[in-house]
Amino acid sequence: MLKSTPIVVLAMIAVTTVAVSGFAQERKVNDPAGLTKYATVKLTADLNHLSDNQRKMIPLLIEAAEQMDIAFWRQAYGNREKIKFPEGLSDSATAALNRHSQINYGPWERLQENRPFISGVGEKPAGANFYPKKMTKEEFEKQVADNPDLKSLYTMVRYVKDKRPNLRAIPYNKYFKKQFSVAAEKLNAAAELAEDEGFKTYLNARADALLSNQYQPSDLAWMEMKTNKLDIVIGPIENYEDQLFSYKAACEAYVLVKDMSWSERLSKYAAMLPELQRGLPVEEKYKQEKPGTNSDLNAYDVVYYAGDCNSGSKTIAINLPNDEEVQLKKGSRRLQLKNSMRAKFDQILIPIADLLLVPEQRKHITFNAFFSNTMFHEVAHGLGIKNTIEGNGRVREALRETSSALEEGKADVLGLYMVTKLMEQGEITEGTLEDYYITFMAGIFRSVRFGASSAHGKANMIRFNFFEKLGAFTRTDSGQYRVNMDKMKIAVKELSGAILKLQGDGDYTAAKTFAEKNGFVGEVLKADLQRVNQRGIPTDIVFEQGLETLGLK
Image 1 (cartoon, one colour):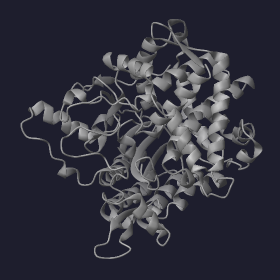
Image 2: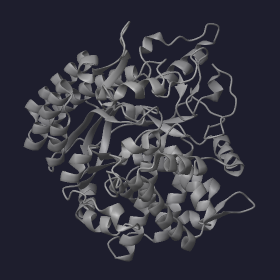
Image 3: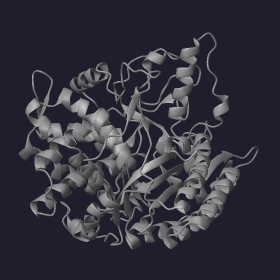
Image 4: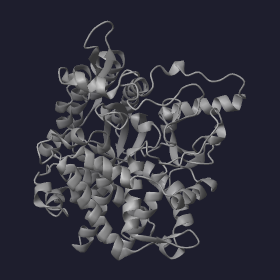
């Protein structure tokens, strides 16, 4: 049994409500009582199995990660030194707002629909700081045909004064030259200490990528690593921050220590990807692509988060690389972040289940099911289809801003579908199907609190309403939920097929209609989430991290 991660509640940051779609209550700007509640987690790991060189590498990897933090601030907000706190507030109120701006990488409450919590800042731009604040969608779309670099994953878009067309694309390696150069230097220095040849090759390749804006070679090198005990995920990666088009990759970094024993438990599922693809509950044309067979599953303890992954709700599992060509050629790697996952399970999921699930089903809430559901969520990202079947290009580009929520929704529900099939085949023998389904249901309540500004929160809203329509659960008069196993199984299959079809068709209008029809929170669920908040259950976690926390300073 794993030892629980130590937790202390961050007393400075309190909450009396959490906003979800259609649920944002009015709050006074500059009111610390309206801030989301987080629990502080010490990011520690067992380093005893590492060599002296590996222990010396960790500070270098953290120093590289810190540069991604600086770059992400500029992508998400701009110059963080320009955030102004109102005069006349108490010292404690100012400190709370300042701390919260660090958690959110700006003055907008990420887990409350990006609500501003500092007066005078206005609404958060949908395109964050990737694009000029006054730029319109129409203006961008008129110019992108003649300048395709405008929608590159790795460019910032800025105005050119007194010139038409007046938008230009600035490659990240130029815009973030200072930060990326320092990060590359630290990665190369770490490579000199690396004892694992695959890790050495990757570190050097990733350093080159930061300087050249060409990331595919380093993604391929990352896929070749199998025996490394340390890892770092670093660079511009996910596109959730760009809610205008979902074109731009945001900078982030994780420094990781592999849990060798848990990784061994997961290894057998990687070989099953082609069979799982063939068994998807959808017509053949929606599963014609073949996933790479080099995919692997591993468990890690995170010792440092930076940038995008450290903002708002914290990532507990990773499925990378995002490059569709690399996925089709080599597959992908799924990294389970065990210490962060355990913290969320103990401090958030269990208290929510105790409040909102019927007593007789609470015994089915297990960490093994939570861990496995999260793992198969990441496996499911590699399944389905990456290119639309009607020639509309890649799914991500065809579905635009709806793509992230639908992809996260697909991964969640398709992961549970795969658990069902693997249990029927005898491949999964731990626990019962009730464990996985009921833990999954509790997970919906946990993630829906992230709000519609989060792709994961939106995906959970869609799933909750879809499941409710098919009778997958019922609500008692006392405000507790009971999972109907038979109807839940049907709902999982139906929703998996629906999302896979939307992605394959690449029909933006249909995808947007589906998301709008299902992606809301009704009055009853609003009231139930209010009860969760009134209990003081944290919405998410923040980290106490770094060399001192690790005992390396």
